[in-house]
Image (tube, rainbow, N blue to C red; front, side, top):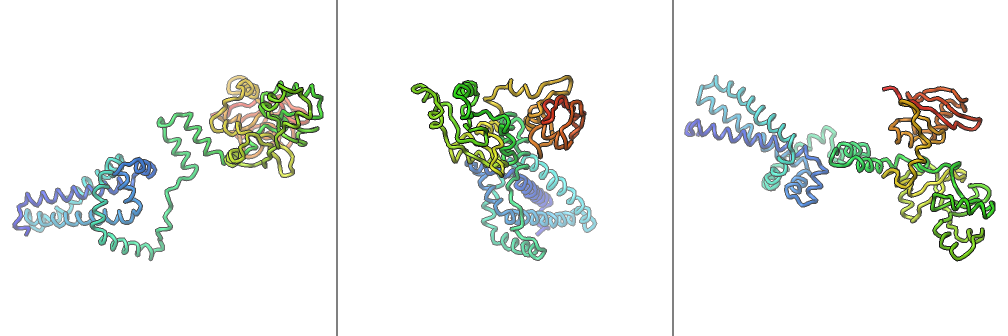
Length: 420
């Protein structure tokens, strides 16, 4: 038959086979390079090419089997055709030259070039190709099925099972990387909010609570005049009410209830007690993600954090958790500035009671947060004693000088930024 077909016709047929080889090679790379989450999004939005590609990729063994079947068929056919053309043009010596030439042409024009282009623009290649592969798989399914049975059998003998393949679910750290790599598609503020949501499981109520020694509340053992003064000076809408000390808490006062009641009655301790809500306690170490759901489930906004002995360690509010996500939005910025004050180039005077996580957020530092929550606790744990004023130390490359301290705690610290 080859003697009856002119060389020009054989060359045209060879060119067509090389184009088909390039098609199979490029589309294989494009389909396997698709971003599965973007693909799923487009498929849900009704993009037909994306829906077809998603269906094909649900069984990648069948898709690969179909592509390899077509690619090998056209490559072997091209090799045979080159042999025929070489014999017609130069006899048997030309066959070896034709094999080398075909290898170079296939490598460059049917493999490297289309695969590179497909890897750079996978969606432009994969979606149109899905229109071809989807019906082609239906037509050639029996052959592809037999091929897959044979190949899966070989993998089974080698101890490889399809169920061993990992899924495409992202871990938290991988999702953080996706968010950071979104670039200008997501504003810096929103990107930080998304990362903060991902970090909620790693942050506990201990990290954001108002500590025991800073709790503002109402002591029913005080005079009614002192109680009224505490209420008038309060910057909070809810105050714990206790007897003697905060560990004797008996309820929580919502100042809005008090405002409604005081318009018609004179404030008394009995009247105040009648307005109290039941205190809500949560164990220390509770992740913020869990506590946020508990607040939502119980329709609460205020909780007292207790340790394993039932002693109150601090107060956490819904606002505290939301600020971990969106940043400060209701607190007084001036109050935050009092804890961290610039003291020369690269140095800051920091209150010993300042929260380490807040210091890291404000100054973009990396002070250790695994142990103590406050700067005072961090230094005391490191030195295993309460240092005197003038003591210098270094924690994780951060030079620290104790400015003020007493027998109970460190009150003021000077911290220098680490040398880069």
